[in-house]
Image (cartoon, rainbow, N blue to C red):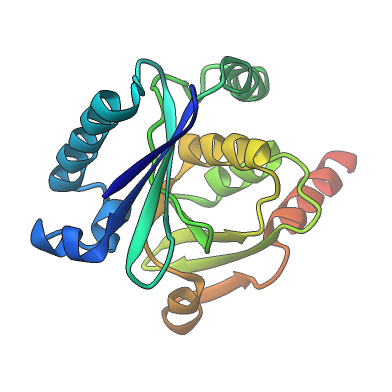
Length: 208
């Protein structure tokens, strides 16, 4: 294990897959947010505090990605106040009290597919309408076991990813499955550019 302090707000923790196996933890466990992985995460933060003087005393973002065949890296970034304020403003001004922003956001995510599950179609539309404009965004919408799944990729800059992730968390729940599974086992609702299609549908409805 090695710890790299990028700056006062960011630290990277490199962990070998052997170290994970010794603790009976898999990479998939991090995406499922089990009690065991959360305990391990806070042990890592404690180690980062002791070794590189990194103190996690504010809301934060977590990204877990594979670094090589032998190890992966957890990047921890303290959340910037202005981005949190912008997220709150977007949600509150658009939907009032319907959804409440109430937590420091701590989330494991990957650079691959982001998949969110929603209990109903209205929540999918609400989330899509609030997402920032992302030129190369790829997205598809599926139904599986009576729930809606929105798969996204190419979410743009780190800032836009943060905003998108927070908005999606307000209306849905992140799932550790990929779009291939949804294509094989679910029903396709919108195969391509789902977010754009949902935005356009709402604009057309409002124009009538």
